[in-house]
Length: 219
Ligand SMILES: C[S@@+](CC[C@H](N)C(=O)[O-])C[C@H]1O[C@@H](n2cnc3c(N)ncnc32)[C@H](O)[C@@H]1O
Image (cartoon, rainbow, N blue to C red):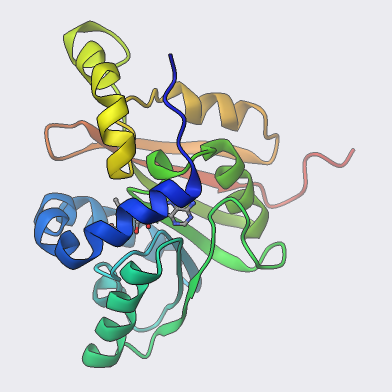
């Protein structure tokens, strides 16, 4: 049976992670964050980072780009604001509490939407992906780093069994890559342009989607 995740429960989990987040999840995701930033910077311009958390990725962006960071957890964002002030990160446009499933931006507002290790924490991932597609400009990209579940075999069974525990900690262990391909199949304006395995152990992936230049939904 699927384990239900609620936005408030996830926000509560990350409020508890905030004091130790960088220590626990800093090094383990470093290479993935670098890969996502490099992919975004190939496009360049105005970026939205969803689930920016403690702002751990913010110093890694080139100052030529601007970054708007949003997250559901105020305690995580308090750390991000402190990081912006301490390091003088003037390329950070703003840091705001916002739900990935309800982005408070007009359509086509950003050149790139980046979501690092966030989608599996969101209760309705497809709703968040629709929001990313709405706010990214035609020709722009959605760059995601994500856990990908094994679907079958022993690892798949363990990931499924762990779900009641990990969902309380704020993320899913069970997450099939088909959720991304099935979502993209519902969107004539979105193309999956890359999937690349990331460390640790290749259990994570960098996923890139491109939004069509012309609106192919209008005949
Ligand atoms: C695993 S952390 C990743 C943080 C950061 N991106 C990184 O690379 O370490 C997941 C982040 O997603 C945020 N998050 C979870 N659900 C969210 C939602 N519905 N809307 C916005 N942010 C959300 C959490 O608060 C947390 O900061």
